[in-house]
Image 1: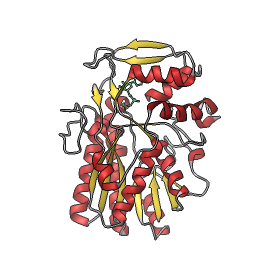
Image 2: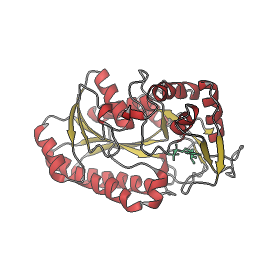
Image 3: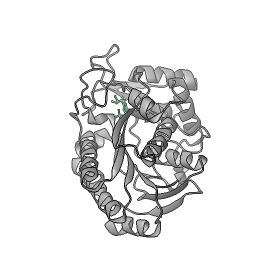
Image 4: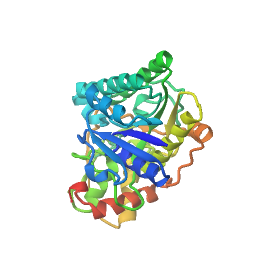
Length: 330
Ligand code: UDP
């Protein structure tokens, strides 16, 4: 297959590109490198630097790369906290970017897209684990823009026959088994990288946001899913569309929740390091518990997570962080 990966220099995008190439596919990447890293681009991928909001830039790639089988779309901003203070940045990049993309794809006759959605589309869940059919009432602007993206794809499918798979990730984490690519955001806001930076002394401590949630230890519970397992799900979703499968939405998680305190404790065990903790107030927009039911992805896509234990996930992340203490800048 020949796949165009938008945002292929980012965290989940780069891991998906590695997996696609490991499985013998041809990959073209389009990324504005705003949050992605050129060092994360697989050497066998064709790379174009460009921004999705610029129609001419995405058009010129599709004019040149005429035989794209499907698109995987990761190019978006994805931080809950940031989206609460800069909502218009999220509307601009996530929604205006996707609108321009869809116009260009329709014009070029590309009709299969797999894209990143999120558990944040659900908001505060009605029950656990969360099913794809559950109500979607986002509590943060990031989730709101992803929900709107899903609807944009839905109506584009109705009008133009462009089929899509939306993958609602729970908490992506871990790193490629080789330790050569991993998670590197600047500034870093995600729990596991920050815990590991505290373990290696790159930062003084981990701040725990909120200890008064209605959970057994008072800290938020999340479903942590390895980035390579997410990558595999994207490839299976592309195959689903290539085989004539209908547009659909799938949750991707392990179906098991860990509290912030449990993640810190596991990281202490895996790394053997002291990790200093400072307790702080809640962060705006965080639901108390998010745990996925991924039965639908397992049944319909044949997805089977490989790296499904928290110690294994943290071990792979530690391999990356301990060799790249300052991310890709080293
Ligand atoms: N969290 C925390 N301290 C941090 C970063 C995150 O306590 O420095 C908590 C956050 O409030 C949430 C969980 O860890 O409950 C996971 O947050 P993350 O930002 O990694 O992912 P999100 O769930 O927002 O997608």
